[in-house]
Length: 294
Image (cartoon, rainbow, N blue to C red; front, side, top):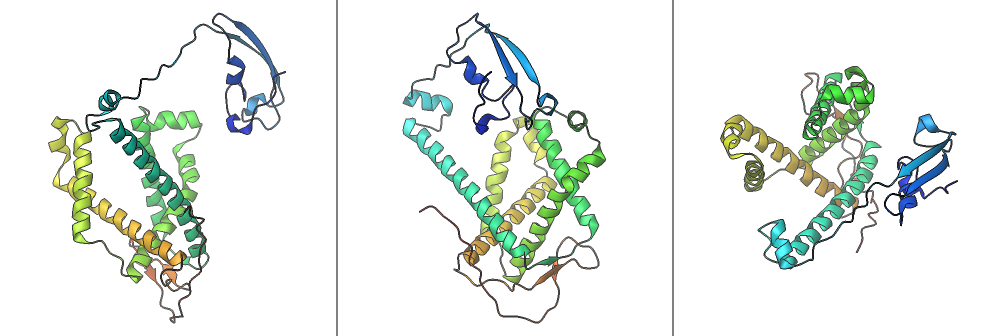
């Protein structure tokens, strides 16, 4: 019997720790493993079953890493003049990724505090629209993986209605967050400067242009498409500034918005939320611990 490995590779096929059993094995080796799947195995159909696994090593490959030289850096991208430029860029990307992960976790903490005080009202049509957006985004990701929605649903053994039901909680969560952020940006007069919008929109359009084949750039960059990009960039910048403001409030650096505000959807079922009229109360600040690395 092969001993169970750590929980870090619990989903490894055909059983956790299988790859470790192949370390040091030579080519043409013929191996047999006996393994009993636990009752809580990720592979439900094999739970509590003892199986015999036979393995034949047909080929062994070795990865040979290139020498880290200036020539190697230039072969990655001509913008890297030497190895230092490449390593600096990698370091910057890792730092940005770490900051993004930290900010996302901290923002989740902030939003949970806001949810305790906010009463959010919206028509069901807004949830359905948010579900549609989720499905469109999923379709785009599947297309990048050369898969269509029908194939995805067959693999998941569900129909379109089942997918909508599965997505609904996530759609509702994102909708509530969006309404809250938009309302706070309005209450606190948070806005995007025209110069910032212009600069970020140009950068985004330039990136899109570099990704598209030359013969498709002109056709894609229609006036309607450009207006859509600018609108999306503006919305993203507004959300980013609102999160910056909320982080400052959570750290006790700025005054908090009124905690008893009610975010309510107007009768016309528009896409923006409104605050219901209530007597103004003294603003309070509840500091959220950041655990921010120094």
